Length: 140
Image (cartoon, rainbow, N blue to C red; front, side, top):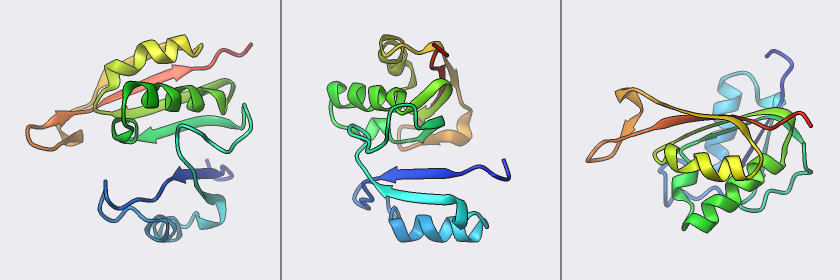
């Protein structure tokens, strides 16, 4: 989308992922030619500093499995749904994709589906294959 805007929220810890820093994310946006349309915010997924319904789409890649405890992950999923506008779309790539179905349904999402991704999205030893969770927040 040539006029779209993106907001990246992270706690920017390199402990979990090497190279995870605000500076490297800003550099990636600059290299892709979209830095003028990207805003980076220091935020915990369990307590997002955004208004309800602030986003058309919420995307997460390999985040939720890093959040400690089922309660913490469920809270982060609820926050993702809260900041999604009615009719908005949610996409999550993660190792525990099947585990997110029920919490998303409980948060009001519809059309919650999981699709297993192929070997190119496998990480670790033994290899953890990721899944893509898709969901929709009802329009009303």
